[in-house]
Image (cartoon, rainbow, N blue to C red; front, side, top):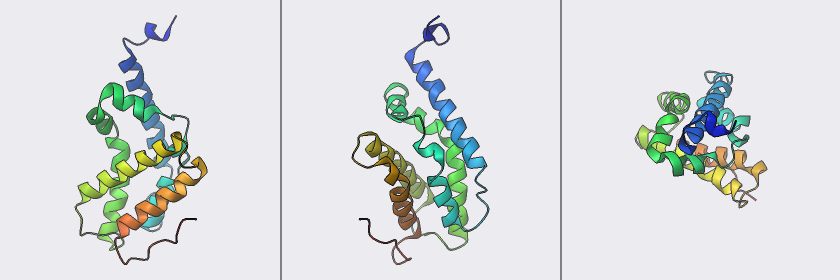
Length: 154
């Protein structure tokens, strides 16, 4: 029996794969104890989670092409809710900037995370560097200007 014996279309296959990958991400994020330590430490743990560079290479591009960007973003809501809660905690605690709207910061996190994976998939950034580059970039963005930026990338 072919895969189409289980799914009606290529879109249904991609949808199932995306839901599965996001379920794995959510399970991984649930194990990270995001309430422990500072919000910056929690964000760093999230961005270094093994799922981020996992086996679903290229899935985002396929999902966006077959399902559309709105559906793909909507399917990320549960996983993204965990990240948003950490960012909000950082804002309340004075660790993260409040001069930009939370939805804009979250859109930036979403876009940069997916851009980093696309760059790694394309071979323009080494996969081993992605977590470090992403964590440093996003934490600088979340902290804002003058809040102890990171050192230069070599």
